[in-house]
Amino acid sequence: MSATLASRNAIVTSRRSTPYASTLGSRPTRLSNPAFTMRQKEQARFRPLPSLSRGEDASTSGSVSFESYARTALAMSDADVEKVLAHTPKLAGYDVAGAIAPKVDHLCQELGADVARVRRAVQREPRLLTVSLDRLESTACWLTDECGVNRGDVGAILCKQPSVAWSSVDANLRPTMTFLVEELGMSPTAVARAVKRRPSI
Image (cartoon, rainbow, N blue to C red; front, side):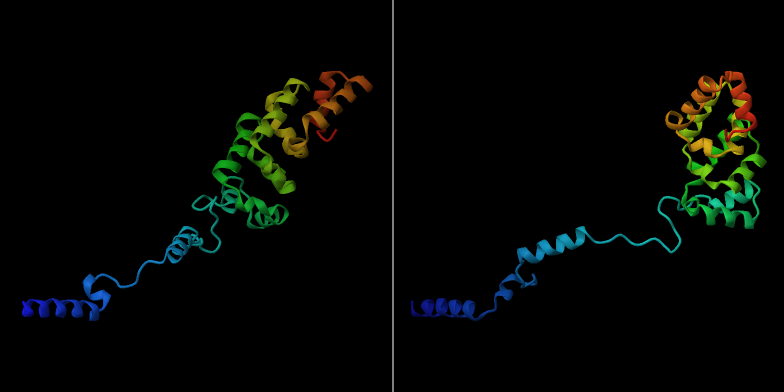
């Protein structure tokens, strides 16, 4: 009986003197801190993404550069490209396949312009390539439907006077047309000839 009691006392004493970690085997001794754990989760959640390499743009990475397109598709010289970008720097960041080439194709294939005309227009007024395709087509429709211009001549008109491409139909173009017809007595046919000959009218 005394031996059994002594054995129990020895076990209790051993448990009291043994570090807490030893009762957990190889498991870590540090208890989790809720605040620390939450902070770790927040840091992981808002960890910044790796930065792109210098000169790389997320929206145009891997696409053809404007410089390359202007040299090949528009047959521009290096000096011409530099002048265009000096005038309108944002063209360098445009997606060529999605935003530049479709406009050039539309001007040439749908509206009757040739590459040489487009090149000269862009050299003179690079902003022509910043106008949306929808705006180009809207202006083309106005010229054909209300001014009586042949659709095949629209490209030449827009290249000759690029500002027509971004002028508002309701605020600028239509009021001008109304003035020419109602105030100056010009016929739609005469207006069409005038616009074709001198788009700045």
